[in-house]
Image (cartoon, rainbow, N blue to C red):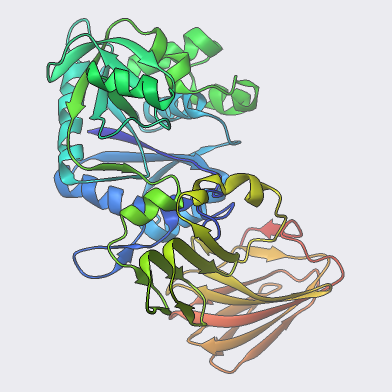
Length: 436
């Protein structure tokens, strides 16, 4: 089975745990069967592999998320990288061409497209095989999953089927309605559109040519920024006549806001947090090394990370994005392919960062023009290369790197360092990469 997972998101609706690099799908907040915390992307990837061990999974994402994907899923996962952030039609078009031209998937094979961030049970993935088979039938161009609506939501689009059968031809699509209209839709058998569908790869390539006059992967990649920024629903689904929907009645939650996110969390507190007397329907998620105490609170979410602290009524938390848009803070925590970093202190001409490298990993070989760096190894051992000269480092060692020097570090064990950056123009853009 060929599966495209769409990994997008700007990381603002679940601030402060999410940011420009760590979108909601990378937050480790759900316990697996081993008692370990995992993220949405780890959970959905594991659920697919549990059912379809030979599935070919490709994740389509922006450049800013690639390191986090490799960090959480390993370096062998297939990633199709968007040259710039766009909507779902360009993203799916790019992924389809990637499968055909790079992975050599035949045009006659089915492709299943899923978002990476719903909270679902295993029956959701069992249905993917039904979609795959249905889209290969005669007179079916797209097979769509329809979520049986549990309440008249104003946040989702609706699928209007021709009848109430398990599999039905789609009559129409309706955009996000008001509550009263949604109630009428549901009474007449309407389903939520969860963004899951299957189609032949050749069909997707034909749509790319029809709408953008391209189908070759390299051509699409080079012209990507010139494409219309439009959703796949608007560009294709709403205009397709030969489209069928399969009903899904299992567990499905769209964890797009703090309110819905906490509904899927089975613990009231994660991290160093205490809920005192009088607390009801309160969730606390604390990534900081300081305690949080809540007393006498009702229907509240509290979230703390290196990027900030949120204290909000759960219903009001849905309106967080405009406030986060106005913030202009640097990213204080991020997962990279080689490990992670956390900013500890920021001054006008200095920055202090805790860096953790995973065993066997290394940073890019690079230099900075406008800052010096001092590395203090606090745990583990490895090798530092400065201007092509290698030295072994271990706990307690201090390494000084002057501006302009090429440098990297290689972790022979898990390696933790305190990195002090000193300069008048400290910027993430001050980085020149070299081959080692």
